[in-house]
Length: 343
Ligand SMILES: *[C@@H]1O[C@H](CO)[C@@H](O)[C@H](O)[C@H]1NC(C)=O
Ligand SMILES: *[C@@H]1O[C@H](CO)[C@@H](O)[C@H](O)[C@H]1NC(C)=O
Image 1 (cartoon, rainbow, N blue to C red):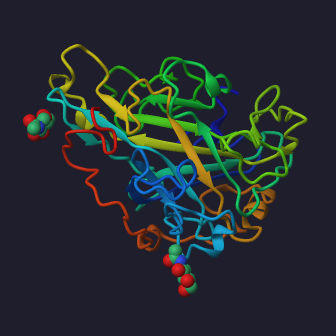
Image 2 (cartoon, rainbow, N blue to C red):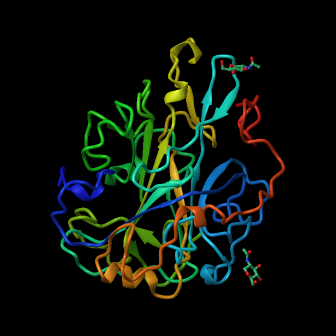
C-alpha cells in the first residue's frame, strides 16, 4: 500500500483501483480567531484558524443543514458548503516577533488562493460508505497534545518535510515514509515547505451529529486501516467516507538560519502555542447540498471533476467571502501570537 498512487499530490501516475477519491481545492475564506465547534459563540476564540469552504462560517453554526445557511463556497465543488479549518502556522524570528506562514495552493488546481486540498475517499476495495448527515461535525487531533501518541497511532496526522521546491519528495502515501514524514513538526529547514496531513475518523455511532469532545461520536477503525476496509467498532458501526486535509505551509521564505532562535529551537509554531506539532488538528462542519456527497462517493468520482457534481472555477470561488468579525491583526510581524499573550 506504500506506493498506492491515489494519495500522491501529482495524480499523474496510473490509477490502480476504482474507489472514490474526491480531491479538490478550497481557497482561504477567512483567517481569524473564531471556532464555532470548540468555542461556539465565543468571539474572539482562544487562537487563530485558517478556514476554507462555505460562507456560513461564523462564531456559531447551528446544528442544522449548513447548505441552507451558506450561499457560496471557496471550494471548486460548488455544492460543498462545508467548513474545514486548522490552526495557523507562525514563524518566530530570533528577535521574538511572529509572522504568519502562508499556504501554497495545490499546484494542479489553478487559481486557488492559500487554502487546502480536501479529500473524501472510500476503501480500496470500493466498499460502500455512508455520507455525513446535515448538522454533522467533528474534530481530529488534539490542540493540547504536546507529546507523541494519541490519534497518531493510526498514522492519521503527520507532517512531510518537502526536501525540494515544487513538492519535492512527494512520491509516497502520507504518514508512511519515515525519511520525510514525521508526527512532530520537522526541526530542520524544509526547502519545499511543510505539508500537514489530517485524516479524520471514519466510523460513526449512527446517532449523534456531534459530541461534547466533538470526537466520541466517531472512531477510527477497530482493526486494520480505513484503506484496507478495516472493521468499525460495534459502538460506531456506520462507515463514513474518509475525510482528509492536505495543507502546504510555505515555510521556505523563513529558511534563513540566521533568523532562527540561537539555541536551535523550533522557529515554527502553531497558533495555539504548539511548537512540537503533536497538537495539530482539523475541524469539520459538514455542509454538502442534499445527497450530492453520497452520489459522488457512489459514482466513484476521482479528482476534482465528477459527473454527479457541479464545479466552479476559482475565479468564481474566490469571490465567496466571510466578513472578518474579529478586530485584530493576524498578519505582519506581531509581538505575540494573537490571543496568546506571553507567547
Ligand atoms: C444567504 O442568502 C439568504 C437569502 O438571501 C440570506 O438570508 C442569508 O443571510 C445568506 N447567508 C449568508 C451566509 O450570506
Ligand atoms: C524582527 O525580525 C524580522 C525578521 O528579520 C524583521 O523583519 C522584523 O523587522 C524584526 N522586528 C523587530 C521589531 O526588530
